[in-house]
Length: 359
Image (tube, rainbow, N blue to C red; front, top):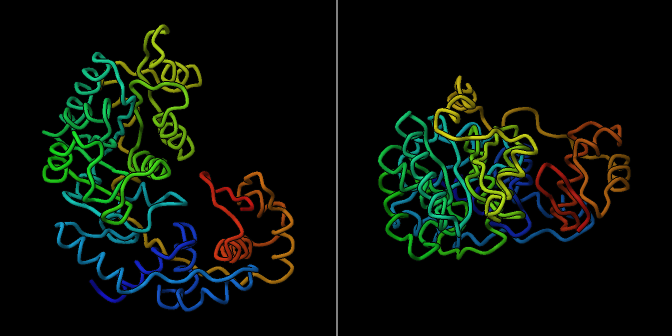
């Protein structure tokens, strides 16, 4: 890989730099080398100590491991990066991929649901995925037990994308080893985490945002209350995507999540035709060439007045950045620069939906 790609990975693998900070840093400084050099100054303005850049040797070893696995990196801003995913404020700056990236250029529908799904729900998910793939739709899921597995099995002969919470070389659950390899060779396998990363609970919400972000719509087949599938559905709503659900018996706890989604306004789904009706005509955003993720004027350095006002508005309860801009009276670029300084100083956390809070 080029030195520029290595520098981008060093910036991304630096502790304390998340997707939002990464994009703002590249927008502000133009390339990763200059952004790395600027970290001490920015963190000092935010009232903290700069994060230590990731070791170049470690990053180059990661690159060698990715190449040895037959995988490649996909950076945001690359021509193959999916446009719908690039729209997210916290879009993954880089994905590791194995397989056919062209599948992301087709209309995509996510199918998610319970890991301990009923036999009937798995059969329905498998048939739904098969019919959608036969109609030219790419089915996206997370390679988990239950509904995810059924969705991939049903669509593997057509078009399927598996998004995993681990490294590209780690299989979870273990019984899906053959299926994960089949998805990588016949479909597309995507991972945000570096190779060798074991799946942890904190990784799954990040995985879920990619699943929802790739798709024009998300179908939930079975889901208990407060399940990961409902997190995916909520993220899809926040992204402005369609949310669909398959109704179930009120006597089955696994159906409570889907029935609740329908009660709250999700589209009731009984067949592939119902799904196709919701996602067609094809959203032009899903097929257009992505714009440069770093285009546009860089944000201005924050002045002391903006810094004082913005820090006074942040609390321990997460608040939308748009609200900080509105209440502060300062330009969005100045507010974003204050938040970038505070994030690099380790003083704030970023949350889903473009919200921030004190750490």
